[in-house]
Image (cartoon, rainbow, N blue to C red; front, side, top):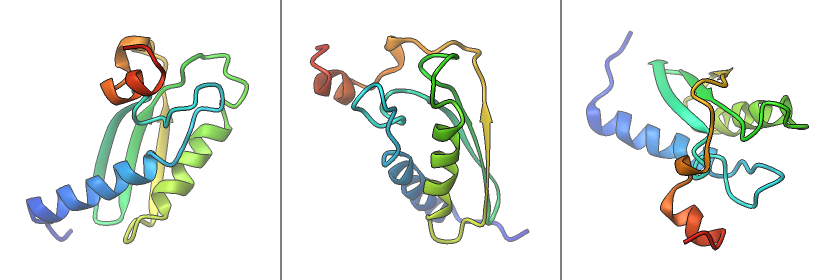
Length: 109
């Protein structure tokens, strides 16, 4: 496995985050990254990314659509060939996980 320089890793991680910001929860008009639904982004090798995420509600009617959208969005990042999305409900999502920018956007600040 080829080692990535720290700069390349950070650049790729930023591109992954940008891709995640194109995915929205259909019930809340904010992207899933700023909602705090992404718990971990782990590059396991040069072309594979593991993402651990949650949903705002375990009974979300689009529970299979959002992880699929996440996978498709991250596969659009140059050099990424495989994305594994793990859906978890611990820790449980809360409004405290929403970014400050998203709180402003939602009028909660």
